[in-house]
Image (cartoon, rainbow, N blue to C red):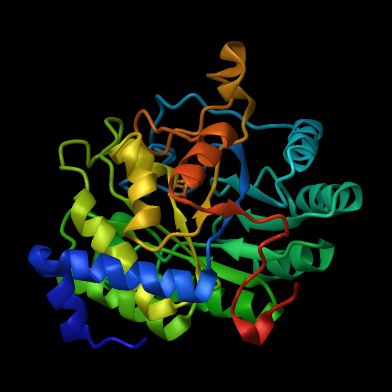
Length: 338
Ligand code: SF4
């Protein structure tokens, strides 16, 4: 249901009213998404990035980051494992890494689609517009690209050489192609105000994304923002709840950075208070294999905690949710494809 900027700011700033807010978010989630929750199996296939975002450990200036790239065969075999585990969405995520050309990525997408009846979400950052079209034509279903913050000045301070307006144009273009489009913000960026968060929520209300991924700022010691405090967990929960209320049936993910900020309870609380209905367990092999831990570690946040598939199932069980058996396409009626 639509909210005004003043109503959003009221709820962001009035902790005493938060139980009522959480109750409402939960009721909206129950009505529009039911008890079904979705698991998305994430493959972080490269932690190289050409960007230099101040808040991210993968920024190109971080010479201390141990970098990895998976080869095609490894990516496809991980997709096989995810599909065998019964997860019907595979998320291919990386930094902005031009090593993976249009041809390589199309080959990977086509091969996964040929082998499995799954949906594919891409989270590759900003690419050439012809790439977006080619990936869609190859079979990709969804594209996730967080807008990070709707404060243009803050965005451009945090993301040198990048423009918010280009990001928003890319989101529109992705939607025009036919992708189910996801976006999201960061809560607690240094210099961010409550008014900025309200603008993010108003953007969600206006754009009505198919998916949203909200996460807290977490200072990484190998970045210029290392001495700033992390985002406030309680405030972030209120951002989740308000986002559920204004978007009704958008797929809302409790990001892994939430579990980094508040281990064990964080994502569970996002489900029972914040209106979330999606978890994105990490499916890189380092969870199982100590030997590969360094090789495939995607540390955009320090000591980033990733929930495994088993942990994700445990969280959902505790929250009283059933895991979807289908691909969990967008619930937005205008482009419902399942
Ligand atoms: S947030 Fe994404 S685009 Fe920005 S530096 Fe990190 S990996 Fe690269």
